Amino acid sequence: QVQLVESGGGSVQAGGSLRLSCAASGFSAGAYCMGWFRQAPGKEREGVAFIGRDGSTTYADSVKGRFTISRDNARNILPLQMNSLKPDDTGMYYCTTRFTYSDTCGFEFLRIGSWGQGTQVTVSS
Image (cartoon, rainbow, N blue to C red; front, side, top):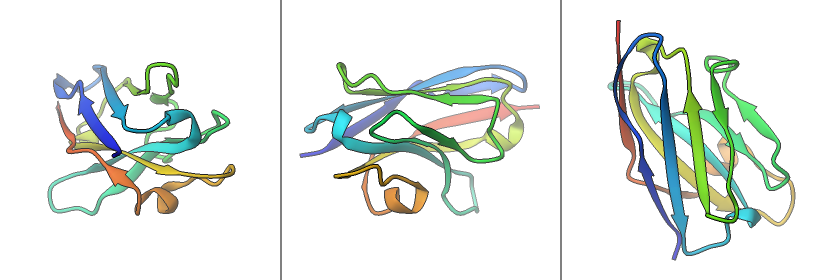
């Protein structure tokens, strides 16, 4: 059974950094497309970043150059390093994953995958 547990959220001032982590269990992360989404109050859930089986990464335009997604397949962990945080980055951050036989990976692909419970990130101005 796939299980995802996010951690590392908190409250920071604009310009600060946070490192989120997603601990995965019940599957071998190396065979999965994995990613992060976020949802601000009153807004739809949006993709932040994803990483494919081959390690290729894609970011939402709003976080390019500030966020870095990576994967540790040996420990089944998906970190998200967030730098230069802005108040618009505030929201609940979710880890998601979906098995893929190929290089298929993307935000829409992940929307029907497995989800964690989320970790709250609050950035104050």
